Image (cartoon, rainbow, N blue to C red; front, side, top):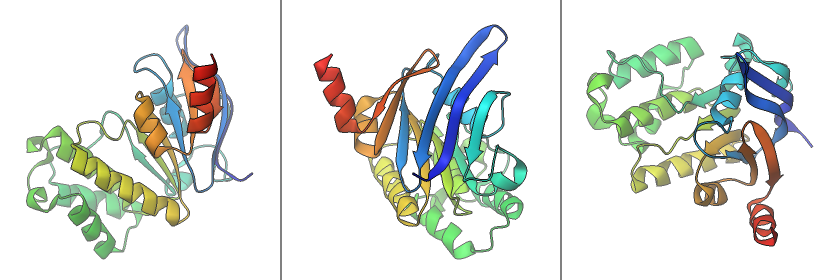
Length: 224
């Protein structure tokens, strides 16, 4: 089994509080794996932050077989965080050009195709601070995909998006998988996890409670 992301005994503490408690799992090559759990306290977002190297942790994180998070590996990773990180005084055009320069993106036609697919043309030269939350989220998603990452981290990516936009994002996710990429996805909604993800790990209070395909998870819940 080839893991695009291997996590073993991951533990993250904020002072005396244990946010992630001994998490072990694997996001396989070419799959969408979902961490499912309630907002606040499950440990989903903290796990994403650990994979990105944004918090201190104990245990093992191996990204694409290249080791723990570090700058040269991050060039192969795209991230959509629950709280988007954008330079709000820039326009989407300027922000994407800035991210592209950092990532070494040379395929401007692909970036333009992402902008069209996400319906951002109308807003491309407006300051990001003036955009709706949904359009800001689209800018973040475009920035996460523009360098064609091998591993995509998506923390509650459908926040603020309407049904049409969610369909577009799902199509982009499918194309990412078809090109050989992998996705770690988080949500607090079982119906979303069931429709989007190939395997699901349910987290509660920092621990992985159960893991399996959507069918296996539903059968286990019904049996319990």
